[in-house]
Image 1 (cartoon, rainbow, N blue to C red):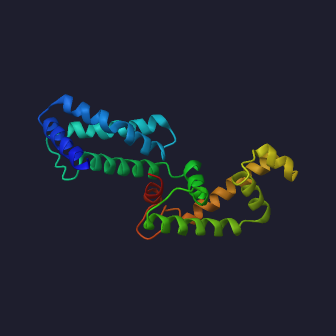
Image 2: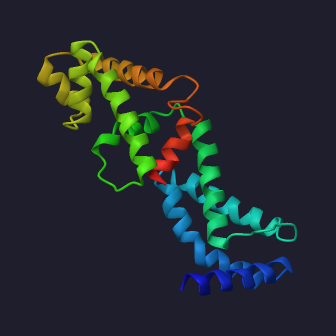
Length: 202
């Protein structure tokens, strides 16, 4: 079945290279949704995720005459989506969303390949080590927020502190986690934080 799909894609690419808009539309309809689902796992803003996928197809059409796609159309489009997602994350890596996504690695039960499993394990150990070194009150606030999913108000009431103090503890905790991963965003040799995120979650 995969061979039939690849063969069909090659015919569509050939027709598209000759300016056939129907062939382009068929590829678009065939792959848009699965690309969007994958990108949206890492891009929390749906419009941004949609724009990334739209850009991929726009580039495919604009470069139709010069492209030499040796793999399948699906493989080419997924690779393009990975690179564009990595670029997006690198530009937005300071957003709390990505720090928290990495901080939640140990809570995800998805199956990985061996390389991804190792990356997940090493990151989780590094993050847990950082959490263990936090000042006691900061660690307590952070864990109540992460593990028990308590709101700032609920944490403040439980610990008899102000909501502003809770907010500052969490902000400082996230900053420590980010610093632990390195300001350059390189938690591992030769791999950017964005690349590791995509490897794990894409």
